[in-house]
Image (cartoon, rainbow, N blue to C red; front, top):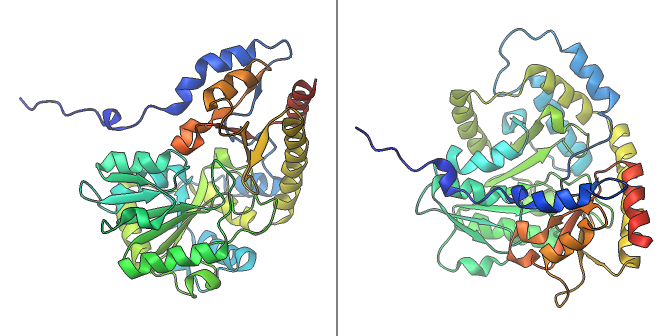
Length: 372
């Protein structure tokens, strides 16, 4: 009889959100109800352009193609070039994804990585980068310094600008340095750019911008999601673009696994990528919420670090102040649920991540409680 192997879940870190249960209960007990700012899930309406496109494609009896329709791939190419200056990408360098999270977690598997491989990711990071490394038994290294690796060159390096959780934006010069470093060593660079359209201060760049990559996508992938910019989290629309050979390899694997974005969702994705009006409207909503919430937090003695982009305020009372969980408990007493910075690495031990993804009414409730 074959001995049962260790369950895959045993190789993974604990699911962090499970640790918030008791604080959520405290927040829900508030007389005016909970203001849940712990998860960045959109709450505003899905744009009409997306709903109309979805309805147009609702009669979809056949299997769609893993590679995506020509329409959706051309829409990605046009959007990268027109909105973010990432020119020179062809439609054979794009793959639609069933949201970006499945891809981030599965990329090491798709690439055939395993024990002996090193995967680098930011010091403050979305936990899924570590999950992807753990699934294949690779060594995960959380660092913001390329010198950390020394002679131990990573196989895969993740960067995330604008950052989740901190909202930090890496300058163009730094991104170019990372691209050059990876190319010199044959490291695959994957840039998680899901918040590239959620910038409040300054400017953020795709690593496929020619000033950064030199007009070549060699050794580079970028990952994008329409969940936040277009309120399409429920549609599971994302894409990866970049190095032609790597995209071809990913396509071959994904075809075998049947990882296909539904046809109606592809049609909706093409439509929203061609429409900037809804993006501007949503951007203004978030900016207004951010302005009110930031002012209330600062008036209540909190400090906001970074947060020049993304949909979060990276909040603290300083390195000598309360720890992340103490801040979570403090805000839960006001009926406000937030995420501890410790979810995102040791560097977040004195911060909390506060999402802007709540209705105007709930944001106003949080502001009232903070400034009472």
